[in-house]
Length: 429
Ligand code: ATP
Ligand code: MG
Image (cartoon, rainbow, N blue to C red):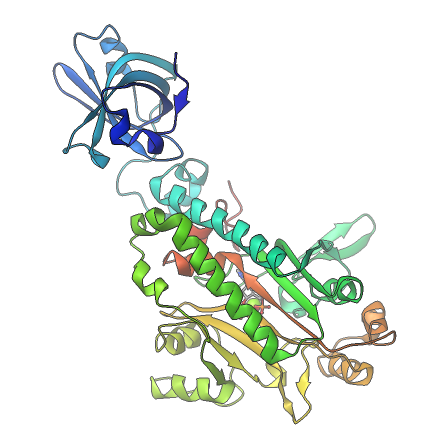
């Protein structure tokens, strides 16, 4: 007997009139008097199968329900009316499990689909998103490895905040109190003194209380840190990474993007260099488009939507006022009220996908910035040490992988970009 094939593989003229074996789940079922239509799905695709009355398994087929698991042996036929243009005439049917009444039927609310997320991830939509996501993870690794970066890991339990106290998750650590990491930042800066060019893919945790379309409490962070680089140079690395990811997703996942109705030609037009605008210019763009901001205003989801709707390519905003950025960002020595930092914003209203910049490498400046932000330098002793022993210029960035996947698939909400999203009121299943 021939081995099992994947549906995608058999959607091919060369298998017409050949006997094939498939296994999977029932995606849809329709029954006429003497024929049962089963649309079968597996990880790769869907295919229509027909079981005729004269088949000894006809009664079995009639009892089958949505999401039942089975294997079939049958003959492939071309059929223009079938989805994907092929159909299988079933000769033999084996059932693994007759599914109970599947709770997901047409027209379900978003909330319900989140309640049954463990089942909804079987949907064609989630299947497509998860494949794009998988490609993004491997492409990030490819990019960094090809360009001479080492992959490293940082702890998830930390003693000090790096992105501000407001979004820290506190954890009981035996008799002590620690936090879940918001970023690898402080540890990355220690590791570049050994490896110079490093990256990491890991979850970051932030107790985001505001409900937006782009915040999770647990997200996957692709972070990069590099010795001897400044803000301008790290922006170049960021844009190369993003272009590489777009290219790889188009190469590997065109079918999925099309299924998700993402306009691939829009993505194909994206080329470096990305526009670089100063923070004040971004504020001016926002104000020209109906907002009323000043040159100290923070840019959140709403403001970034207005600004990024004016762009059809990712673009950088650099030189934020120092009050708006974490203590480790380096003030511009020529303009110390502003920071040598950059945010990379996705176009089409999506907004920030990367935060990056140059880090402070002068000890005195670092201590002053820690104090200015109301933090205690004592809590950062080991980190300050890095400025005592062979300090160097360095820069880095963090890409929110779900933010990128949401944009590249043009999804309406970040929760659609991860199998089991975590938000302020969502931690089940
Ligand atoms: P925002 O202003 O949108 O909250 P941030 O300035 O806090 O973002 P950074 O600290 O610069 O973000 O983190 C780097 C990247 O990590 C961001 O550009 C974004 O892509 C991603 N990121 C940050 N917070 C979240 C979150 N809560 N959920 C998903 N992704 C996030
Ligand atoms: Mg934030």
